[in-house]
Length: 489
Image (cartoon, rainbow, N blue to C red; front, side, top):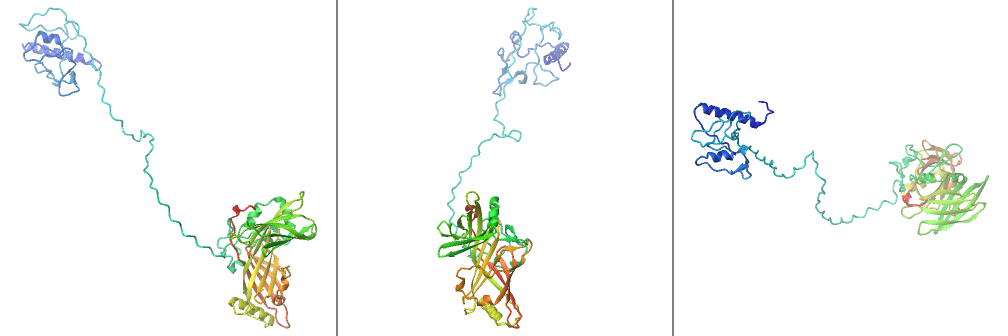
């Protein structure tokens, strides 16, 4: 048989073979297939249970009911010896069907009219049982879990941290003038005199050169000069280059600034003044001048401690047709000084006095012939010139004045510039100048552009003595500045 035939045909053929075999052996038994109600009524067996008509399932241990194809066959029904006992026999087929003629009834059985039995209605096929619903499968990698908010445990509130102890107060003389937004040279120490001739540190430039190609530089390691240059107006460059010098002095809360500028080919001088205020800004007015320009100005103190060692002057020069804004940095501070005295001495009495002055200062001897203070005053015109003057004052009221331009080469620190000894210093006539008069010449030999300079001093000739030479290294004492981003400049 081909697998495509229906299963009931295969079972009918097999049942017919069994019946023929039983007939050949001389035994006649009535085969009453399960589910045929008419045959069961015609020849019931003693002790056989009566089956309900149209039952699709039989009672058993399975509470859900078991289909007929899975129920065991009755004990009085013949079984197929060549198949599993659990399989029921198929119902007989009426004569005249394709599977062969019907068998005669056994002797003594009531005569059954030879009429074809009514066509058997096919038993209703029960609907396939629906499997019980299973709980949803847990998500796997192929079935991502739906995004559910993950409950978070409540965060325990931490008690506020105890206040930190106050930071230590920085020393009044830090080694590097940072200036708030400083891009200072790493490792630079403004108190180390050896840095005066070190070429590895970057200088700060005003933006102008002299006729010999030297650069006008600043006098501090902060980046204030670079900041003002970056934010300057190109229209102010010409006016800035006409300023020859600027000097700031303070007397009993009043500020005076003397500016010398070129008008045409003539040098003119203007004096502006004002009084200090609580907001660190000083409004300046012209007190006197011999020029034809109009000038307005203001001064802003830059020290982080509220002082004014470093300040910025903003000046508007000219009328409404030729107005130009010029900015000038003023450095007005103390300085340290170191004297280098040669071992060989000529015996000149004037030099012996100068030598004793510096030795007493180094040893802090109990005498008036020693150093008291060194004052450094510098100016830096943005896009213009820069310069300084310095007063070396002794306990004996001796004063030595050194002044000159702040010039330095692009590479290195070596210079050979003559220093000026006739700077206009207020109250200059109130000091003695014996030591100053014994010195015939001073030259600027080094400038690192960061506030350190070296000078060579030569004694004047006296009789047959050699002219002794010694050097002084001056180091401006710097103070931190306010953050530049917090100041309107």
